[in-house]
Image (cartoon, rainbow, N blue to C red; front, side, top):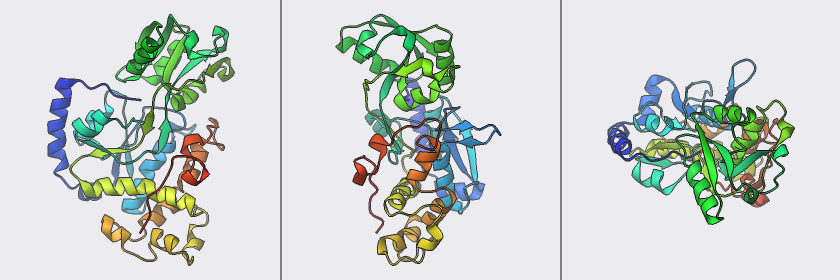
Length: 338
């Protein structure tokens, strides 16, 4: 999902960001005893409560991974559940330390809002969810359709561009949350829902009969989703960035939450550096030498997190696709730990 820039608010938020960024986020986080992490208000597979009220998802696990890197304890996280309109301002103002809510990396956000994207933990794209009863198999058959859209996002901008390019028209019905968009769709107030494809698969699970709707094949935009921090604090930016990279390298090296202790005895120099047996990576990050070991032990490698939350071991069953490791034909590529 993508936040629309409102000029007057962005100027104020940028000023706030400049003030907050002068602080040492790592030291502030240590003083608070927890990582303050921004999440979605509820999106299956990414951030949503289970039947016991415990929040789980790929973004939740990233928050837990950062806490593991900093404290060695995945539970030292304070979650802030933010909608699309609130998320960036909450980060800019210092309300949260890192935003792990599904948020698209764009030039505007990276250059004019005082923010830094620390990587891409999910490559996505905007798609379309329609009822099977509508009888369409392509987005190009949706001329004149009514769309349920979440307010405060650039989803509508992408939709406008796509429909204009294809000489079609549409009618928007806007809602404050993604949950409301699927409720509107289920109630028959619109013909289709458009959002990031991953979100559409998650929203479809909320329908009374998930098999009654399909995601059309067209993907009309690039939506690289990933964690975001404030500009001006390179130490914290590095910690968040290398948390993701460590999880990618762990998967590539065959290290997971079950075998990480045995891997401490490995003779592979790449494994030894990643797990802190040799080298100064932890020291260079301002962390304990076992920062990456703690991430893997407490949370798992990238593949484990993907599979249990949105992949083959989850109700969503989303294929790795672009999110496979580079050596398996995907785009996930971790910089070397050396």
